[in-house]
Length: 366
Image 1 (cartoon, rainbow, N blue to C red):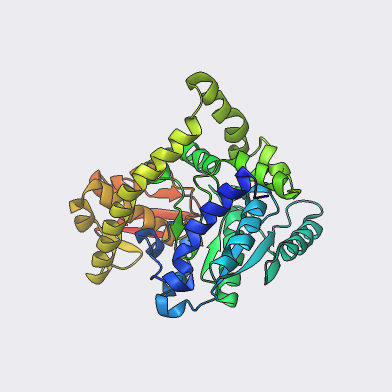
Image 2: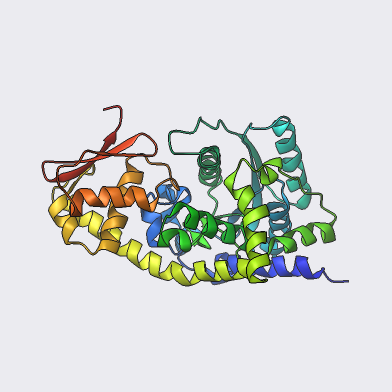
């Protein structure tokens, strides 16, 4: 008897995602323009650009990031089945954020379960989630700590890829959250299916399918209480906003949001590429990384200029995901609407100000 429909769907998604790493079909790992900026925590690792056909041997290792929830657990099971059939090894990493009672025991249990599924090596990592800075919530702080742990595991094990369990529903939620923050086209583009060594095989798969796959396989996923805690914006979007939109507009809202993200990603990545090139020219023309020439910035198209300014702010210390269009617009006004106005305070204790014909990014403590 073959696998159930949900298990088969996930295995197909993972097979498509990993096919290029199979020893018989190796290609250079493609790095999108965003990999070379500080715009995504998953892109911050310089080692992410080091994977070429010559550097990914047969039997390359793929790691699965697994919390024990339905999405990542179903992904781990699918990868455990698919990877060996592609000539790949598969391991797992689970991260204990230490934010809930019993988290260490739960992480240890997830590690044991991953081993039972056939993943090897398996690492359980305890991290310290530092207090969120001004303008940065606890979710962003936990995410930063998690990616730091995943980066370290990938480097230590020389992994060719790290798989993340985000689904179509997560993508739809991300787009809605970005719209609510007024973060612009970048947020509408959602999460990329691939960035550096990080891959998201399930972005076209509904959350219901991962839950069904766990049921078909007899797996009991962990139910994270944060996912239903309305103190968190994502929980409110998941349980209130999206169902309300489905009620008002009819079914298919999540799919439409995810489709919109996919359609806009190519445009966003093209603009990111152009912005990255301009940033290099600014610095190459004796513009200090903290101080960007206002005259040159003013001559750039608005879509490029605002990306240059946003990435400069992130590199100066603004937490990823906290800059809104309002923040970026205020920085842009230092270039295009300069009339001697004061500085702009940004999330993460960063301050943008104009002085001596340049836009500077410094600490508010300076």
